[in-house]
Length: 243
Image (cartoon, rainbow, N blue to C red):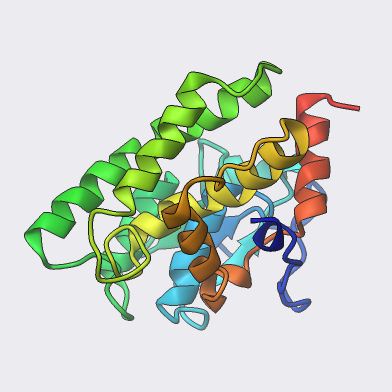
């Protein structure tokens, strides 16, 4: 998977600049639908990918927040929790990435990202509910400077098995869905982190996962949101206090 891990960012250069502490707030609740994100946050990226895939670039405006120099007005005027992503829509602001991707899918036009099939819908609910536990399992050893744990291996093996449940496509439900969005932004980062910081290839011996990552890297709605791998690695090293 070195090739996938080494893909450069295709992110357009016309994205709005991130707003910091000296920036003026947008005219909140003026009828504009805004998605508040950070360009480097995997959770915000989930909502960003969902917006892109549904073709909502003209209906949902991106507002980037500089989390290292967060403007006070974001918490005071927009989203009291102060985290990203958040979505300003119909005079309300909603947050939490896994809730937001469902909300965007249900309340806006564009291709549906959850299936009508009952078995696939149930499996989707189960996998989306597991996403936070998966993220914790993969990040915990990195944060604690521990080796690759049994929990990491088990979590990766669980994804490999989940990717084999349906055989009508390379994604978790066969066809591309919210489940893929819930996991790919985390996988994008841990693939880089574990490869460089633990010499561990998360896709080795997991052909379903390897194919999944390869196919995700062909979906423009996702690739346009990707970070440069080395930039992501540098951010991680700073956060983890690794020289």
